[in-house]
Image (cartoon, rainbow, N blue to C red; front, side, top):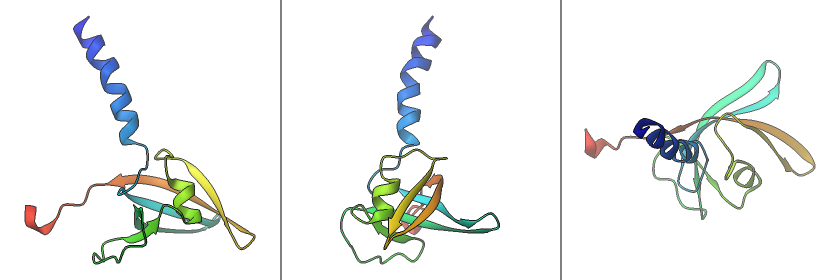
Length: 103
């Protein structure tokens, strides 16, 4: 019985870990066609901050892409529109980068 309670308590936390939120770093795959997919690392930020870390590209929450991925789940394919052109992107995974100070 105790294991079942622990399992139930862990489920919402695991689901939250799969949801994209501000300051998360994610791998996104842009789907331009069946054989035309570009993948890169992005960080969702509140404001248009200067990115001093070249490990990822920043995306603001208010941008079309930021609005599309914010609060969506890893594995989801979402779409967003810029200048009447719609793009599809798959949220591949959330990443935890280790800083050089922790090594």
